[in-house]
Image 1 (cartoon, rainbow, N blue to C red):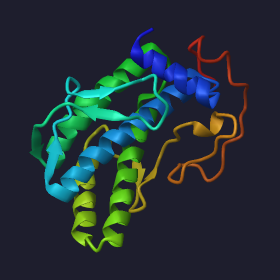
Image 2 (image 1 turned 180 degrees about the vertical axis):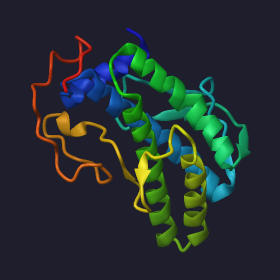
Image 3 (image 1 turned 60 degrees about the vertical axis):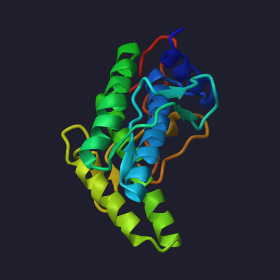
Length: 207
C-alpha cells in the first residue's frame, strides 16, 4: 500500500472516519499544520526559512499523530512570503493535495481551507508566544508573512477577518465523538441528511 494511502487509512481507523474525504482531510490538515508552524516560526523569529524540500524532509506515516517530521537538510532561504510559498505551498501542499485527490474523492477547496486554517493556527500560536515573551515584533512579522501568503489564488479567500476564521470545514465533526474546530465555518455541527456512505474502502463520500 502506498505510504499516503496507508496514512489516510490509519487516520480513518483511529478516528472512526466514515468516509475517505474525512480521513484524507484530517491527515492533510495535520501535515499542513506541522509544515507551516516550523517554517513560519523560523521566518518570524529568525528571518530565515528552512529549505524543507521533499527530498530532505522525512515522515513516518505509520506513527501516531501529531506528525513527527525529521529534516535532514541544513540550507535556509530568506524569510519572505515568496520563499514560504515555494517551500511549503508549492513544494508540499500542492503535490500532497493532488495525491490525495487522485486516491479518492476530496474537495480541493476543502484542502486549501485546511492549509489556510493551519497557517492561521500557526499565526495564533506565534502571537500568543510573542505576548508571553514580550516580543511584539514576532507577532507583527508572523501576521505580515501570513498576509503575503494569503494573497494568492489558492489560499486567497479561505479565511475571514482578523480572527482568520475559515470558510470551509475539515469534516472532523463527522467522526464519532468529533466536534468543530475553533475556527470552523460552522457555529454548530450540521445535521446529517444521509448515512455516512459505504466507507473508506469504497472511496465514496456522503453528501
